[in-house]
Amino acid sequence: MTETSFDQHSRLQRDALMAEHLGSWGELRLVRVEPEADAELLHSWVTEDRARFWGMLDTTVADVEETYRHLDLNPTQGAFLFLLNGEPLALMETYSPLHDPVGLVYPAQAEDIGMHLLLAPATRPIPHFTPVLGVALLAFLFSDPLITRVVAEPDARNQKAIRRLQATGFELGPVVQLPDKEAQLTFLTRERYARLREIAAARRR
Image (cartoon, rainbow, N blue to C red):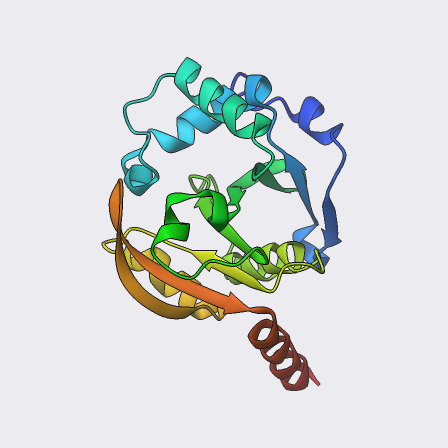
């Protein structure tokens, strides 16, 4: 990863919203996206063909900066980077379904939080790391005691993302039509999340 697309010093100086030591993998941190500082990095991710379902293939760096600047100013949305030992590995966006078109196609609640996840292009293989990232992501979302359900709505054609969500514990809802795509609704309740964590802990004993 080039210095022009990733200012490691700048990102390491940001306050971590979550930090977890993952043994031999190192430290996983979650920081807020800073639109101006991160626009070039994010542009390099969202314009790859592998990110076509993200819907930003034809954007410029300026477009990406403006998109995340607008998102940063919206109190019902958020954008975050997961870093492993300072290297950005994934982009996560959160939103309130009650303030999003998805809230019109299912009975959304104030206690729901919506989530999008984009993995960074692989610069080096980290075997079996994606499930670990999923666990950390959910731990962060459910750390807000007011949240009772996580909602994700990947493009219905994006079977890889749907399988990844199911592997993390999400249950499939209906396929719905949104303004920009046909989407597969998926849900994970706090109760199911807690039960899956108990089962995983029991298996490790």
